[in-house]
Length: 357
Image 1 (cartoon, helix red, strand yellow):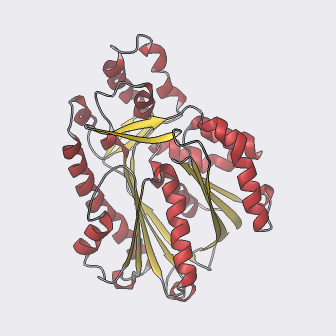
Image 2 (cartoon, one colour):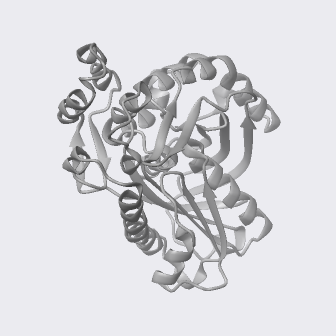
Image 3 (tube, one colour):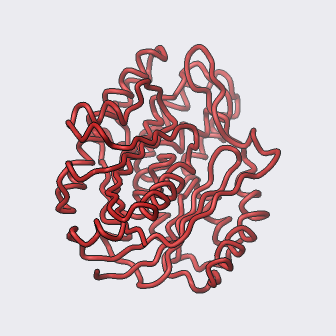
């Protein structure tokens, strides 16, 4: 079965304390929301302590054009993706010439040619790499990208697949968008970049790794009539955020049945899962996972810690959760990766996780 070889992440230099971001939002929204002092409590309720940003916070004090923000997105995504890739390859003992496929995931900026082409050019990777740019899946993109790589590696045992996720959520901020959705977004979202290597069975034999994480199965689920739960409205100034308060309700009402059906197909039950690699979404979403699936609070400790220390980085976040499991230790046995995103959608990947290859 396909193997996850390594995951690396980027820590941006502009890491900001949540409490220091509150005055910026208060000043920005005070004229629109008379109850701003009550609304500002949302910053404390997120359970976020620090957040990753690719630019200093003063960048947001003046209006920026979409062109300016998108140019920063392209350059930052390119430079920091290469940093994450080179670290991932070095730690894995894999030469860049071995890469057969590149899956690039993002929803927070635009580039054509897509970023994978820019990465291949700048790194001088093989010009014969199979490219799969994935755009628009939002928070679900991370698990979906792993699933796509899993399918490719299963079909080609010699495959060495590079999966790169980039979300620079801060650059989508529109200063003159004074909606409540944007207000909530300013308290929650942040920036992240991650690289992951997945191999087929034959390629795995030539790698060096201290663990054996195999991709066993995956499932996608789209919920009808939920297109407005999250996403973007595209306006002249950029990406206007859509963010519904109903997400925890959807988790409570629907996710348990989906998880149970998926696990049943693989002869498992929720109680058999040893490692829950969940995209956090937000504090209320984590609580909804816990309640709906009957989990213990400690089952989602890594998910909570990533939210606390980095914020919600959209598709990238689940990679940071996985990296934490790999770096700090996991329980041997089944692992379940789960992310929710626009559509409204649910992406799951079942892993078999062992501590030594």
